[in-house]
Image 1 (cartoon, rainbow, N blue to C red):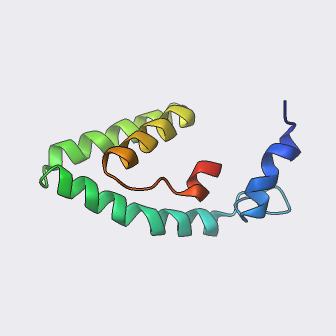
Image 2 (cartoon, rainbow, N blue to C red):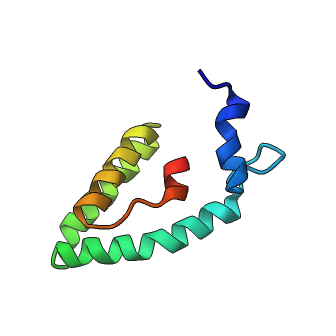
Length: 95
């Protein structure tokens, strides 16, 4: 079993966690900015622009995150990326 320092090494190497142990919010924003638009565009395209479906996807992801169920949220994201034919980003996989 990895300890907290060993577990955070890949995140530190990717500059997601700073040497101070704090989350690099700028890096998280860059990741979100890089991966959200193509994902959102593909969801919009696949659903035929159906706003209700897009809203449900957002609501499910937001609810999982709000409930502290990040692992399940990432599994849903992995599933959606796969269904949409998009590669799941390596940097997001680290999270």
